[in-house]
Structure formats: structure tokens, C-alpha cells
Length: 258
Image (tube, rainbow, N blue to C red; front, side, top):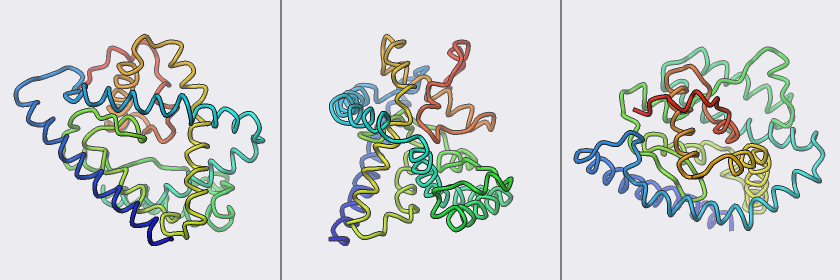
């Protein structure tokens, strides 16, 4: 059973990567013939994917996450969030070293070891109390440092907002997550909990978005791209938590998306 689950995951990664390569190729070709301010050459496809994601959220994820947020004690939600944040650290460590950022690479390694042991598998965050701050980075920033352009905006099914350059981060996040290689009887419940907990964490932000935005697709795209620009330029943290997408001042809307 475990082998089947891992096989499905690897197939998802492979076919997902091929899909992203295909659409990025289409986007690159279209860019040669047309320049757009928002760099969303795949908007028709993206809007379909966005609609599917919103439907899935409206009828399944949002109701479950709302109940989870209402009935789960805050101390448990914090511990669960810490646990899954800790599991993302190997991806951060890898990209830090790939960027030649040895200081943050070693710091993130220390943080991972401390929280995985003293912090009881990451449920607690003693590393922060010890002054070992969390460092954020991802594949998109690594590729940006190599001079690779951002490419088109993407709305990836289930995953959500992304760009061609940052899309490989989906695969590396899975492959470098230690829980990927657990027995399926543990892996499936953990994955379910991760999704529900993540959706629960962004309920306030998405509620504000739903009330404030006239066009949800445009709003999500433009704020996401602006946040990515700030992150790549090193003046802001990435959207490690999805609620950061909507943490933007009105004046920021005039930022260039080039």
C-alpha cells in the first residue's frame, strides 16, 4: 500500500512537471508575440483552474476548515502549524545552500535539528526561543538568482497561485518532506490534516478577499505577483503562509509587475 501511495505521488510530480513545462512553453511562445503588463499569457486556462479550485474550496475545504478552526483549541492548532512548518525546513535548507547562502543554510539546519528533537518532532518551537530565527527561501528565488525569468503566472490545480519559475517548488517540497516516505496509514491522515490546517490558517484573509475583491481572480493574481517581486528582491518574506498574499497596503497596487 505504501508503495502504491508513493508511486501515485511520483506520478503526480512527473505529470505535473510535464504539464508545467508544456504550458510554460506555450507561454514563452506567446510572450514573443505579445507583451502584457501582468504577464498572464495563460489567463484562459488559469481562470478555469482558478474556478475549479474555488469550487473545491467552497463545497469541501472551507466548510471543513471552518469547523476545524471553531472546535480545535488554539494550542493544538499552533502545535500542528509548527509541526508542518518544521517539515518544510529541508526544502529551505537545500535552496539556501544552492544559492550559496551558507549562513542561513547552517542556521536552518540547526533550527530543524533543534525543533525536531527538543521540540518533539516540531510540535514546539524552541529554536526561536534560542534565537535561531526562521529563514524563508524557495526554488523560485534560487532560479531568480541564476538569472531565470519569472515566466507566466499560473493557477495550478489544488496548489493555487504560482509562476512558471517557482512551480518546481511544488515537486521539491514533496520530495524533501520527510513524511512523504512514511507508511500510507500515517501519510494519508497527515496529508489531510496538513491541508485542513493550512486552509484554516487563511480563513480570515480569504474572507476579507471575498468581501473586498470585485474580480477574485485578478485580485489574487496581482497581489501574489507583487508579493513575489518583493520577496525576490529581498525586501519581503515569501508567502510561506497563504494569508500573506492579502497582507498588502492599497498603495502597493501601483507596483510594476514586470
